Figure 1 (cartoon, rainbow, N blue to C red):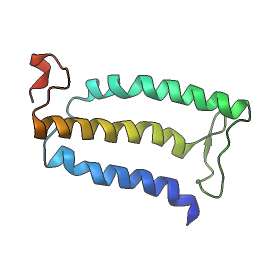
Figure 2: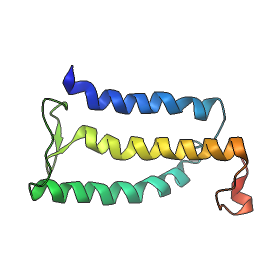
Figure 3: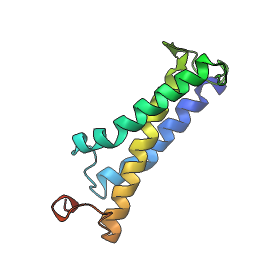
Figure 4: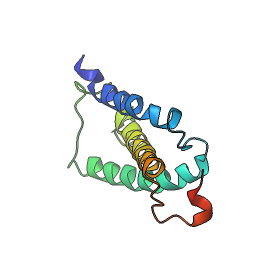
Length: 114
């Protein structure tokens, strides 16, 4: 069961934040271009960083705690998913706070609305 721990944590993050999209109608998925602009730079930077760390043998992942599926460069599938899921959940949480509090988060007025 240990090899599913990482995936289970990522799934839990998605399950916990899914109601924010559905109940509060934060429209994160509907504004997918904005979501990509928020997530893609982080994704690229961290994947490159981890690939470098793996290549330098500063970083390694246990096959006992992951599925053992490695992408080129030795990057575990779960780590790639981590760099997508955690920012997505963060954006959902930010948009939920904006929705509930009315905080504009520094967005221009035309973008702050639903």
